[in-house]
Image (cartoon, rainbow, N blue to C red; front, side, top):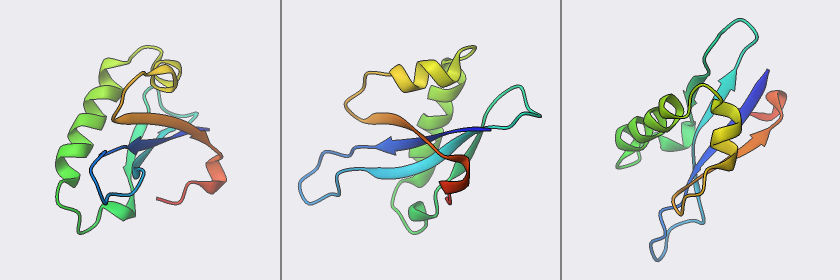
Length: 89
C-alpha cells in the first residue's frame, strides 16, 4: 500500500501553513487510488470544493498518478508520501 498526503496551502494571512485535505491511497487490490478525506475538513467552509479539485488532480495525473502527484509544481498543492500505518484521516 502506498499513501500520499494531499496538502493545500491557502496562503492567506492568519491561515495555517497548510491543510491536510485527504490521503490518496493505493491498495494492492485496486487499479486506481482512492481519496480518503481528512477529518480536519469537518466544519470547514470549502471542503467540497477542495475535494473536487483534489479528485480532478488525481484523475488528470493518470496513468502515473503517484509519481506525477509527488512531482506536481503548485503554489497551492503538495503531495507527501506517508507511511500506510500513519495516515489517520
